[in-house]
Image (cartoon, rainbow, N blue to C red; front, side, top):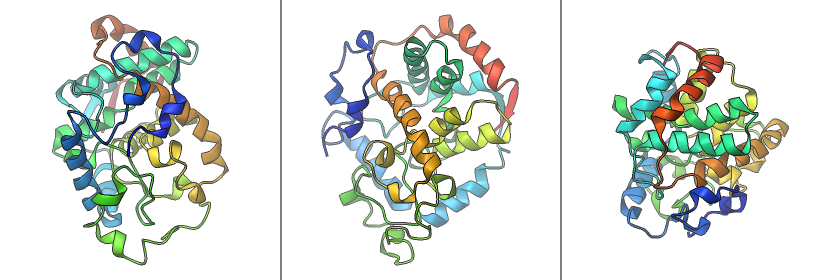
Length: 282
């Protein structure tokens, strides 16, 4: 599979690039973590069916599992190493601040964008509540229609997914109408959709562009490979540049040079207080 097409959207982040060349990111063919990564995706692509996704929506979208402030959720990611990520083997909390700081340097006047960088992965707290990582992390894809070729490991990991053999679900559009819009498409269940639901449930005031980044940043088959365009409407195409701009920082700020989190916390707490203050329901 090799390097990912999202490499084309690299930002200028020279200070962060001491460890890796851009072509080394998202390499799903080799590397020290490849077995862990492949096994996570194999489980995901076997078990993420339309029925499974509907079940997870009913379990999590009501936000009745926990109550906590956003910074508490960010710091809880100290306990999580993403088993689907071929680029990092350190806690996700560091990646949160790395992403936010990359955005802050390039977009100093878009504070909501910086906040999205900080919080985009905190839906992964589901893994700390017992959800398996294959139902939390990794690239996302629509269910209820044909699994497209841009999905990582597409050729070898869906053989045991019953939806792949179901004629109601394995046509190009499946259960959807052409150009129905991604708002009307059920994505594989994971941290993107969960955090989007949490933000909406708690009436957080992050702009629509930011909510879209949260909801679709892991949809690599779409924003980096060009798949599933037949399901998109005008809103999706208008939002894609924002998702791609976010992706640059999500991907290329992952280095072993870790930020001073305690020094950065007060600034980002001020952004949390502005857009998603207080104790939220999760």
